[in-house]
Length: 386
Ligand code: 0WD
Ligand code: CA
Image (cartoon, rainbow, N blue to C red; front, side):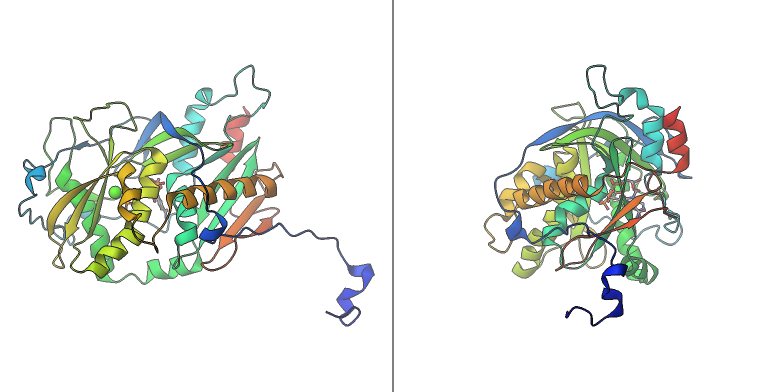
C-alpha cells in the first residue's frame, strides 16, 4: 500500500499494534522424532448420572464383558444396534454448553491434591500448566491431518494455569442442527454397542435392552506431561477390563468403538487414514491401551469384533505413504501449547484468547477483553480464591 492514500494511514491515527503470531499446521512443519510424553496417572474420577448431575465418585464406571468365543473368530454376533432407537433413547441436550463445568467442579472439590507443594515457587492455585478435556486435545493432535472440520479453542490464564475450552464453530452448529435421521441412528448405534459389552459390576452381564441415556458418563481425571507442558486432563472412559493384567488405571481402561464393515481396499485405506488416526489420538492421550471395535453392516448389525492395541496402531498405518505419523500429531500439540504460553500472558478470568483454525490455514488468535463467554466461570474463581 502506498503511504498517504488512505486517511486512516495518517501517522497521528496509527495505533501501535502487534498481532499475535500465527501457527502453521502442515505436517511438513512438525516432522521429527516423537517428543517426550509421560503415561498419564489417574488422580481421581467422577460420574454424571442420567440427569447429567455430577457425583464425585465412580458410580457410572462399567465393566467390560466380552461374549464368549470372541477370540475364536467372533462368529455371527448379529447384534441389532438400532433396537430401542425409537422408544429407549434419552439424548443429552446438546444446546446446553457445559464448557469445562464438570471438570472444574472436580478441581474445586479436590484442589488440595493440586496445590503447589512448599518447595515450588510457582504459587499457583492449581500446579499445572494446562487444564482441559481430552476431546479438545484430540482435536489438536489431529489438526495436521484434518481436512474437513475446523475448530475454535478459547483459552484463559487464571492464577498461572491455562484453561482450554472448545467453542462450537458456525459450521459444526449447522451440521448438528441439520443432522439427518440416519446420522442420529448412527450416533445411537455407538451407544447401543456399549450396552452389549458393558456390565454394571465386574462379574455382571450386559443388559442390551437397557435404555440408552447419553447424559451418563464416567470420567477419569489424570495428570500428564508432554515435553515441557504439564497438564490436568479429563476424559470419558467407556469401561474397565476386570481381567486386565495391569489393574491400575488407566491401563485397565478400555475404549469401545464402532465402524462400518470394510468391503473394499479403498474403504480399508480410509479406515486406516482417518478412523485409526482419531482412535489412536484419543486413547493414547489418556494411556488407554485397548480398543474393542465392532464392525457393522449396512443394516446396523454387528458382524465382527476386533481388538486393537493402541500402541500397535501406528505400525498398522506405517506402510501407507499418504498416511499419518504419530510424531507429527504430538509435535504439533507441543508447538501449539508452547504457542499458547507465548500468546496468552494476561492472567485474568475475564480475558479470553480465542484460537481459531480452518483446514488449509494457520491457527489465528483474537482477544476478548471482557468476554461474554468465559472459560473460567465466576463461581470457580470465587471457590478457588477462598
Ligand atoms: O458438548 C460437547 N460438544 C462435548 C461434550 C463434546 C465432547 C465431549 N463432551 C463431554 C462428554 O460427554 C464428557 O462428559 O465432555 C466430557 C469429556 O469428554 P471427552 O472424553 O473429553 O470427549 P471425547 O474424547 O470427544 O469423547 C469421548 C466420549 C465419546 O466416545 P466416542 O467413542 O464417540 O469418541 O464422550 C461421548 C462419546 O461417548 N461424547 C458425548 N456424549 C454426550 N454428548 C458427546 C456429546 N456431545 N460427545 C462425545
Ligand atoms: Ca467410545
